[in-house]
Length: 162
Image (tube, rainbow, N blue to C red; front, side, top):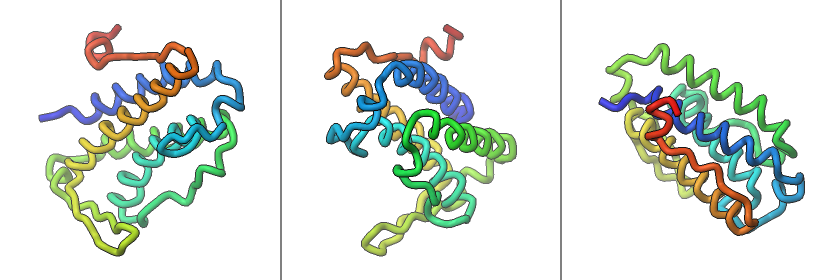
């Protein structure tokens, strides 16, 4: 069985390395519309946090479809950090309370067209890290366009404590 806390631990450690690189960008480089999936590098980063928050702490928790935050709430990295820390804390609490039977619980998502998809928590726990790593790659590609080294961090390095 997949160790979900370990997988989430990996992408959060990768985020630390990404964050260190993001701190070296100018505010302009961080927030300029670059035509990415969520316009700016900052917005792509915020999206990765919202994905986790929306799926685990709103949809799965039964609190509604989405966080009330918007991309406009975050003007800088300093604005993102408290939200990121809040979501990390909520996720750690979720993992400390989750039981094997919870993996089969349903998580519903209603699309813009009104259709509803139903997933299991287990599917969502696969989806979130894959989605996050996908978007980290998108940020890395933008770094390369800017002639900035991307902070690659493999799972194998993480799993061996390097």
